[in-house]
Amino acid sequence: MIPHAAHRDALAAQQAEFLALARRAPPTAVVPGCPGWTALDVVTHLTGVHRWAAALSRTPPGAAVPPDDDPAPADDPAAAYAAAAAALLVALDEDPSRPCTTLTGAGTAGDWYRRQAHETLLHAWDLADAAGAPRTGSRAQVADAVEEVLDTLLPRQVRLGRTAALEVAVRLAGSRRWVLGSGPVVAEVAGPDAALLRLLWGRTPPTDPGLVVTGDRERAADVLSAALTP
Image (tube, rainbow, N blue to C red; front, top):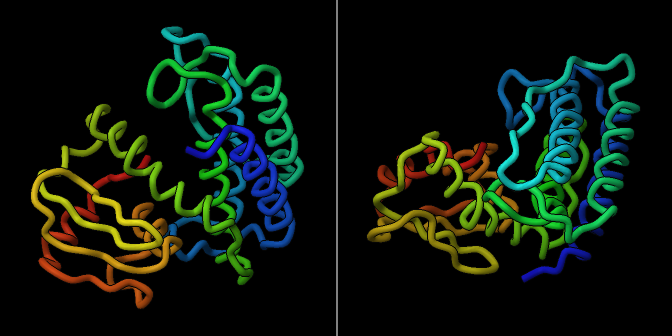
């Protein structure tokens, strides 16, 4: 398990990368992996997500959860994001052991370092693609972001009724071997962790040239088309 301190460092690094890209990408630049989204949409969205996470980190377990609606675009989107990013770190750093509400129920403020680090990584990639810039992120963080889909995000999607429980499984073969779903393994998708992460988040299809699908391709496509993430 990666310690909170490492996730905190990853979050701060990805926030800096995201802010640089927010200043670089034209607001109307199209985000290839998110049809209908522009760079401005991504910046506005992550600004709202950081604010929501900061609020939840101060919300006691069992208390009413604040709404997670995206805010209206700011006059200076990059500045608004910078303020939200700083405020998030302040909220989490106050007391990482503080009991609070997380995506899986009761947890601590420090649990949010991981979730927000991975969220910021993904959206930094969105902005990088929109700006024609390289994607960043350590191999350890990318692998853990794949792990998070399986151990946190997909179970929450099922619990909230956003997708049905997966009755068959697909093996993911990257730097590690993961199993997506339960029941018999019907196919395997092999490739770099970054491509697997983008696949799980709907940023790229199974036909991505960086991925190799073996086994029952049709059933694999059905599994991968589910709402695996928020």
